[in-house]
Length: 161
Figure 1 (cartoon, rainbow, N blue to C red):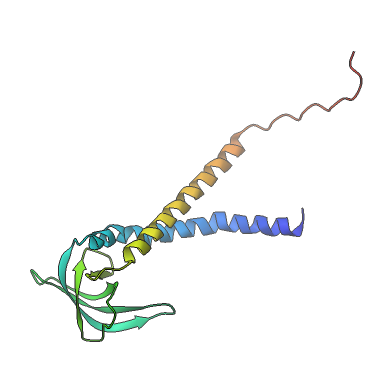
Figure 2 (figure 1 turned 90 degrees about the horizontal axis):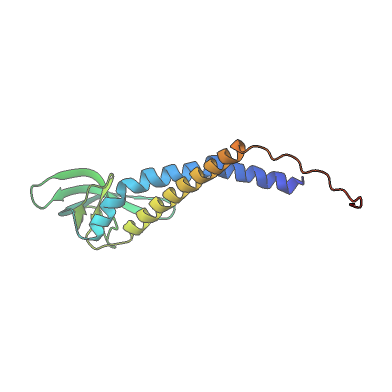
């Protein structure tokens, strides 16, 4: 067995036993919980209201606005939520129309956006990783349960009579 075969085998084992379960857990825990709220917002559902921007937090690739949401009817309020798909030009203290569909950490801008695609992709990736992991485990268990085949009789080159 060459050194490359050992490395590739090691990488495969790490991916199967650590990578796939981690991808499945992240995808299913983070994506699935917000999948229905994201699609409901995309389809115009939820409670209409106003988001007031309080502060903007920026990471390496994107920024997100945190603030308060107040429902138009009934005045229900959610404090310190994220505005998903925030419109351009939002600044501290300004307001934007939003929809509360029950997402864990935020509300959705009524201007639309692609958060529903991101959440859907994350959920599908988690589901695919979970299915792949289960299939790999089931195949491994089946292989171990199969009886070992008896060795083939040695080939004889003697002339037959």
